[in-house]
Image (tube, rainbow over all chains, first blue to last red; front, side, top):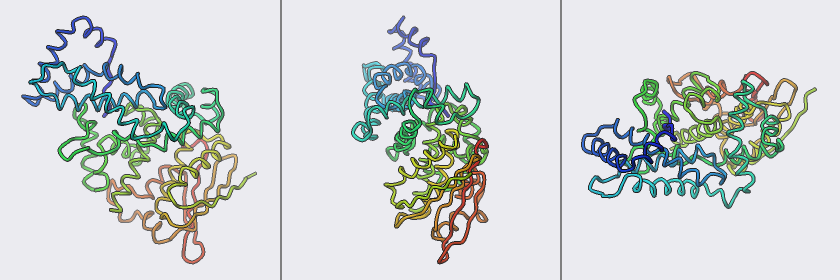
Length: 263
Length: 128
């Protein structure tokens, strides 16, 4: 299950050409979702407003975090806004969602606390590594070496190693943590349609209580890695994340499971 | 020719990042791929997670042109043996054994002094 991707240029163009009509369509979709529980309407709302998330996420790029990670965090803010929107409000969904998206992104950065602990140059190197690894993996047809990554980024292998460690030192809070309230689903659990693979992993989860603390996507990533034996590069392609992100989620998930077993 | 690097590190979580960094540096010298480094780091990390947080642990890395042999321990036999068990694992259960089987090319256990054990991990270049 991926955070949905969208042709943002197309969506933006349609919205810009007739904003009033776009607001009316949003309102109709919100009504279908909130009054009839139509999850397809909710999904469409998410898709329609991902360009807004992208636009807001870009403002926070270059602060030591990969843009795709910021976008995913922002998408969670969007989903919360859609779920909490009250139809009586006169405000448009875009206006209502903006502070939610920005707030989620700011919270993400605050939770990481990178700005005071990690030199900015290393943060930036870490942020650019993800893209470099994807490019090199595509070009070479295999996982690149540290020397190759260093050459791609015009830096030294030692700095690449340090930047790797910087990346592994943080956890992708919103993607890895559980629901923030008892009544609230993890937003990522609610994106996209039904997926047979996830249903299968749900069955397995019943056998392993420690797995239950993980979001479906993390469970599926663990299943792909440790049951199917897929390499991170293939998992990354399947779930639509960077290899570095998959690596972090695997490490984080295993730690969470172990904590659960010790409780 | 195989080179050897020995390291004694505190088991406290504060030093895990240092251990990971050192493993990365060693693996880079044999030109491991990013993913292979990540695998070896994960193997050691999960093993150390079973070793507790008190005292220190010895890590030994034998570096050759084909890959890295790592020895971790002595470790408390009971704790690690329990984590390495597979016989009672239910389908879908993620044991340390299952993790190691996935991320390293081979592993084994040697007996050490006073009933403790040393875990051997072998990661070969280009197999990942």
